[in-house]
Amino acid sequence: MSVRCIRPSAGLKGEINIPGDKSISHRSIMLGSIAQGTTEITHFLKGADCLSTIGCFRRMGIEIEEKPDYILVHGKGLRGLTQPPETLNVGNSGTTTRLLSGILAGQSFSSSLSGDDSLNSRPMARIMTPLNSMGADITSRYHNNCAPLQINPGTLSGIHYQAPVASAQVKSAILLAGLYADGKTAVTEPALSRNHTELMLQNFGACVSSTMHRDGSTTAQIEPCDELYGQQIDVPGDISSAAYFIAAGLLVPHSEILVKNVGTNFTRAGFLKVCEAMGAPLTLLNKSFEGGEGRADILVKSAPLKGTVIEGDIIPTLIDELLIIAVMAACAEGTTIIKDAAELKVKETNRIDTVTENLKAMGVSVTPTEDGMIIEGNAGAPLSGARIKSYLDHRIAMSFAVAGLAASQETVIEDCQCVDVSYPEFFASLESLY
Ligand code: S3P
Image 1: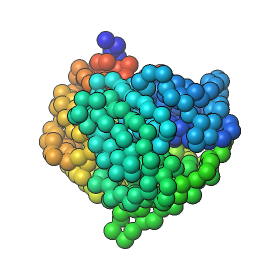
Image 2: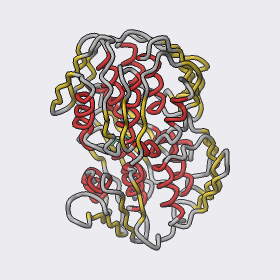
Image 3: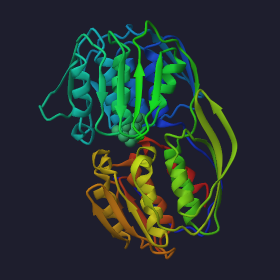
């Protein structure tokens, strides 16, 4: 087992270059593979999840060159994939599984995909139901609505799907299948989830549009198209990874950190709003915009935090940051309430349970609820150092490493190699700030 000891810090100083966005990196490989021509990707995230996506497309005949500073994807067009010789290994990656299923549903060959124990226990009915209603033939090998999935060729028709949850993975799977359908495909979700698929599809030449409705629900729609065309993509830094360093800078007294090149797409930036609501305005510098995606450097200085309520339409814009927000809430003054976040239960772990367990181990008063948690902040008093289980969930490991910086004694993170899923250099970057 790999373990890390986190020493309490007396002040963090320095600059961090945030690695590429995981969601955008996945999509750049997928669209690059089914486009005509070459796609060049800079600042690609070489985390285990995105490497799973690369592995899957290589098994379907796509040449993908990994250079030190960029990736070249030699796309073969919408109908250029070939049948994989064996079950595609999606590792720990829900994004690979769900988005790839949308693409595989439109192919003329059979395929199957499977991942690790955590992945193979995550719900897949949420993509099987809409894709099968488009005419796909996707079944769960053990009839439990989980991977391994078997995908046989089907003829796809456009649908208008009313998604019960706001999920970019579900929306994206349907839009990608829509590329292969015989008519317009639309997805309405109850609140807007991350829109990287829509933006990137547009850049690759697809006809995609989005409409926001008065009640906050949003419809994305796509027309079938003849071809996509290879692009140059510079991936912005991942705001989900930046959140750990922003939180560390806020929580550890006497800190000042410049977190560089952070993606600020509004469908992902709920964390910045929560920082503000907790009394920690951040300074955004060097703002820019490319391919529909915003980015900025973020200057963080330590600040006392106060509790807040996080609920409703903001949830999909910070779903992966709720763990580190829970750690910030534990150090804040007052109570923080997280609601409408039942999706936390179906991530890499049941994150309501795993966050609660670990916050309790650090002496925090926390009550799990059906769709979130209630956290009593300790008003800046240090947390208790503890032995923390990562449960092999990368975001648990990183969130509690940050909690350890704000503790009175050493904190040990067990099974910490799981950070490789989204942020292989996480611990090295953290140490560079001591
Ligand atoms: C992702 C969407 C989110 C997020 C996941 C990445 C994506 O999942 O939690 O880490 O890249 O589309 P859901 O769409 O299921 O909420």
